[in-house]
Image (cartoon, rainbow, N blue to C red):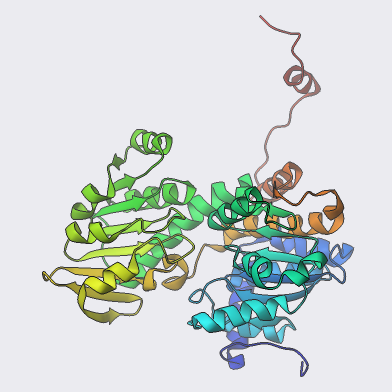
Length: 420
């Protein structure tokens, strides 16, 4: 332990963290099964892994899988406000080098990224692509030793696909976010529940009867809109994609531009992966007392410099809430500094959905270790057999049995000769 490198807030929190990690594992039966499997087969024996992820109880159980598989793991935070300090301490006591503190500065954040890269990773795990970006921009001498990596988020996959299109990506990445057993459940049900949890914890406002605007109708936006409606809110969706806008309309939501929605909205939540979705002109018309929050990965979806420039006073009436008084007397309430509200003001996604996401992560890492020589330097889908296995294991853990195709049915679906 004396030679182990780490930077966490308080090692005395380790026992509390261990209890919460075990609590989360009770809702993660697929990850539990993989811990047992990886312990037996050691698919990651002596593999150096650097991971830049939200340091939460669920991530700690992914770390358990990787360590059980024989990995040499270093973990840093993927967001300055998402680290659970007791979890970070517990992982250090488990022998993992962890570089993460809740509320760390911008400089500390990048120092921690580089501490993870000092590990000379053979495989990277990323949540937002900051680790991959830092590696390619400033530590490119390490790239020849990297076999591959995984990416967990929509935002990160967008960045990595842009790198691949530009010919800048130097090793294969598996887009875990795009697995069916990830985005259909984690993004939709996980983001939906945890985002509303963050809004309520931060404000203690009643949602019923309020108008909630959701910017973006991807899988995260769908989940947020669904859960807000379930709590009795009137829900508006803003979109730039005509197909998604049409889908939101036919799902029963109001659809309009942000400039029209802002004067009506008690809550505005961004979930787009783009910047300045709530922009300077929107502050001209935003409703007095409106709460704005971000459920996208980076803190660029709300134009924070514009908001701060307009403000004549800023106060903090509650934890995770900053209230800005504008020149005309209106008030705008910003949650979690514009960072991920579900992790900064709440605890993140429920363990049951992260069970599937992190099972995909672990199995994809093992796939890279075994098959890296066959993978081009591009962004790859999760192999369909991994997706299917995660779903099968999850159903099995839930005591759900489904039908299987008969031989006749299988032949029919794979042939063209039989018709009317």
